[in-house]
Image 1 (cartoon, rainbow, N blue to C red):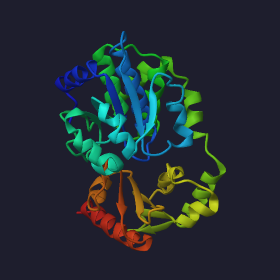
Image 2 (cartoon, rainbow, N blue to C red):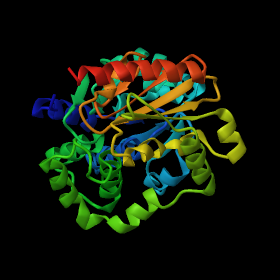
Image 3 (spheres, helix red, strand yellow):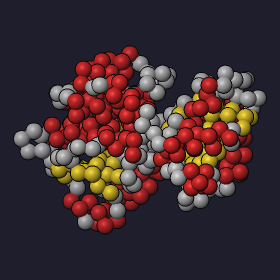
Image 4 (spheres, rainbow, N blue to C red):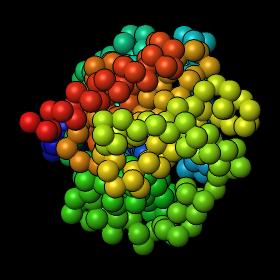
Amino acid sequence: MHCTETELAALKSRLASARHVAIFTHQRPDPDALGSQAAMGQIIRKLQPHNPPSVSLMHFAEPPRQYAFLQDGLTAINQTMFTPAWASGAGATIDTIVVVDTCTYNQLEPAREYLKQHHDRIAALDHHLTRDHLGPVMCIDTLAAACVEIIWRFAKYSGVAMDQDVALPLMAGLVGDTGWFRFDSVRAETHLMAADLTPHVNVNALYERLMQNETKPKLALMRAALDSLVFACDDTFALMSLTQRDFSDNGAAQSQTEYLVDMPMIVGTTNVVALLSETPEGKVRASLRSKRDVDVNAVCKRFGGGGHARASGCRFDVPLAEAREKLIAAVAEEIQKHKR
C-alpha cells in the first residue's frame, strides 16, 4: 500500500486550517516515533507561517533519555503528558489530532477512549502492516522504510522548505528504522530522502547521540540478556529474557532494552531472534526480529501484536516461562512453513 497524492492532498487540506493540534505516537517511542512527532509539528506550523497553530506533542511517559534531543529546543511547540485531566480539559479544545508511526489502538492504549471519542478529527500517518481505522484521513505506506519517509514526502508535496530543525528528526527516524540503511525496507527512494536531508544534518554527530550515548546499566542489561540466551528450532531461533529483577538489580529502565534483541543475529545459523521482558505490570513484552523468510509479524499477530515482517512485537498476560514456551511453539510453526 502506497500513500497516494489524493491522501496527501486531504492531509494538507486538514492541516492548513488547523488551529489547535495534538500529535500522538505509540508507547515506548523510538527515533522514528519521536522524530515523526517533532518534524510533523514544525511542518504543520510552516504550513501557516503568518498565523501558526498551537501544536502539542503528546507523551504517555517521559521519552527515553538518549532520544530527548530530538524534541528539546522546540520552543514554539508544547510537550504534553497525556492524562485524563488533559483529555477532559485542554484536550477538548483540540480540533486536529495527528497520529504518527502507529495505527493501532493497542499502542495508544492510554488514549484509546479519547481518540475514539474524537475519531472525526484524526489524521494518521503510518508504515506498519497492522492497523485500525483511526480516522477519516489515513496516509498509510507499508513500503516506506520509516514513518518519517511519509512525512518527508508530505513536506515536499506541500512545498515546505527543508532546514536543520526539520531535517534532523527526519534523519534520526530514517536511520533508526532502517538500521542505518541495512534492512530490506531500504529502497532507492530511501537514499534519495537521505541525500535531501544530509546537507542539513551532521551525520557523525547524530550517530554519536543515537548509538554512543548509553549508560552503564544498559551494558548490565546486555550481560543479563546474553546470560539468558537459549537456542531453539535447530539453532535458527535465539531467545533471550529479562526479568524485573534484572532491571531493578542493575538500575535499568524498561526503555533501555532497545537494540538488545539484535545481538544474537551475529550467529550465522540464527534466522529469528526474540527478547522477552517482564514489565512492572506483571506482563511480558516480546520483541522479534528476523533476517529473511520468516514473517515475525504473523507470529506476533497470533498474540494480538504486530508490526513489520522483519520486526514486530506483542505482549503476553502469562508468566515469563509460559510466554517463552508459547513463543517458541509459534516461531517453530512459522519456520516450518518455509521448509515446505
